[in-house]
Image (cartoon, rainbow, N blue to C red):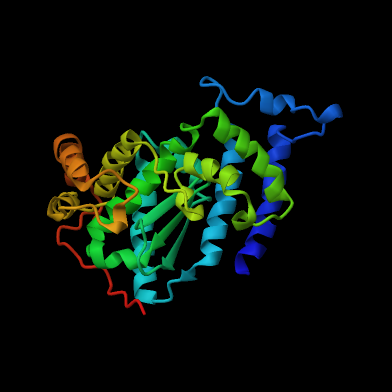
Length: 299
């Protein structure tokens, strides 16, 4: 029931987003289709960013509200430390500075107790990141977690959630906006409507739609996240070693490209730049010794 309160808060935000962008859905005489929907989208006409952000924030609050928060202070303190270092690195990054500045007050990270997650973390349009501590048994090291969080942050910093819309998904986005403003819970909406919307945002797993972002965007986020983590002082060699040791894609990463592809891409394309960024990290940022993540006991 907790997420219903969250949705009540977020609905007001969605009303504002729809009003500001002008994407309200008037009832037309004879039941005609509103011109706003007729015009959406074409390949050269992107969806309204504020509406995507508003829905993303609502879905994030829904996800946080239905899960159990991590209550181990050691775990939470370590995650906050890594996240803060990554945010600082993003603000200092020439490529990401402008978007990072916009997100500076919007970033949210909730650490959630999910025993066997299909992904270690997920990024939601609007700045929310969900981290699942059931993944720690596989991740093991701070450096690997930093690159995973960097990967998710890179999706938002690169605005990948605005680059994957087709007409059906965008029309569905316009349809669920009013439903959210009316307080209708996401899990009560038609999966055929909400699924394509969340799939286009790369967060379809929330409603059982396992639709990751395109392989290319995932690999780009691998590189960008690795470099971001390196700039935050985390040795990229640990992540390369982690991927190298994986032989089959486990349940944890089923929504990402196979480990073999990711390892090859990182080794050939990303590692050199990440190592350079790591060696240039200054101000006491560099962490030269691998550090184990706090132990998480999942009941």
